[in-house]
Image (cartoon, rainbow, N blue to C red):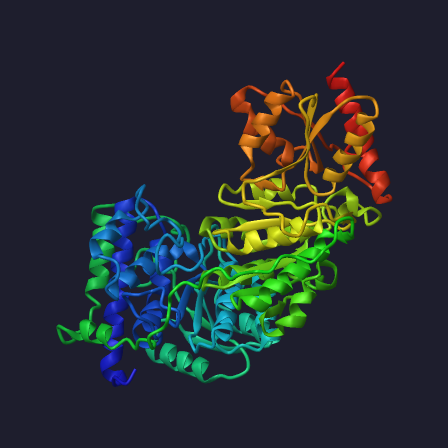
Length: 624
């Protein structure tokens, strides 16, 4: 800002004061919320929005706007108040906070145009901010990303994963600001007001670290200017603040976390105490300052069309693992579409995402063994228009499940890929066998879940995932399986493939992934005894092909078997059961029903009840 500091600071003070007042009035109207944590952050937010960030207040999704992530999502009222102060949110809307049907929810979500990622599950904002900052390099933009964090959430391990990754990438367009207000929910925080202890930790991770009085505008503005001038590494500003700042009966006092001031004398007193601190400024000072917020250059924000992608190149019967086909497809699409980015957790030579790295190294982001920040950064990328594919062993995605849950709440365009799923991985043992991942992702109602069985379907599922709106999970397998589909075969989200059928089918067997081939083997065994079965590859587990499954159940007198390399709860069996239940049919489920152990893959399938012999036995028992 070019405005003289002596004139600027009183205006910023009044803006911050109004942010506090608006937060109090909103939370009092709602009867719930966190006005005291808003009060501690008000000066920082005022300085960011009115004296630091470059953005178009009326077009918050502008590709080159500076970005603001409120990691301490419980301070949502001050975020809403800030966007009201810059002219986007009508002031009257603030009093509808937390009302059903209003987008000013208790914690921010991307239902609001100025929110990139949902926050409120603490410890996630910095990882998302990292992805947002890295995306600037992808689109060759000079926008900067600011993440406002709480000191309480700094106890989360995911914060330090993000801290290390940000240093590894050497980015300097990411600025963290920790609102060190000393008080957590139930007691003081670990470090309270010991900024030095926090500074040593951030400095140890390689961040440029600044300690300031978070209620002194001169120090705030100087710190932001120094952060902007810093090159080659991210900056963390540690701001000493006081919870409930400006309200005498709540400031720096325990017991006020998450408590709205009571309507009437309590809230009125708080507002009066703040109003008397307002500085004498010109009547139009705030309007003038608002009008002087620097805007980025115009950007072409027209959506890109889906590119034409050539078919995969395989021959029928060729033995290829679906995890390998995933890597091939990712590289093939990545060469065509520069929105595709790949993120890895040090297993790219097993998931085969390293094939993407070879063709587009500038869009490959290695996070090492830190799955939370990998998924969090992917959330940030997705929020800014990239199509991110974070991949690792499926079992390790469970470490990042809270991030996955928040990605679903955000409805972000994130494409997760989990390999080495199920007992079919063999000798590595149960710690490496994802057996709950389908349940985990299916539990999120807006997730698409795809589970291909061969190389062709795997490549086609990667294409589907890339251009399917919203979050997607692709499950791939370790064993090599025969190419079953012609390279020109078409696949759809919500589809399935009927691989064997006849008018005499006695039982429908539904498989996915490796169990499709167990079902086909069982089909051949049973055929020798004159028993015909229908075999369906339900590669789209969510949404599932209810029409085809119901028709098959009807054609086989309601006899349906599902077989999956997954625990019994939440996977294919539950998906098929829900699909055919409205027609009155039930499912006999073959699934892994105990904690497995090491063994050869072919032994494991039979031992744990999902091999061809188990399918044969189930079919025979049903037609007796």
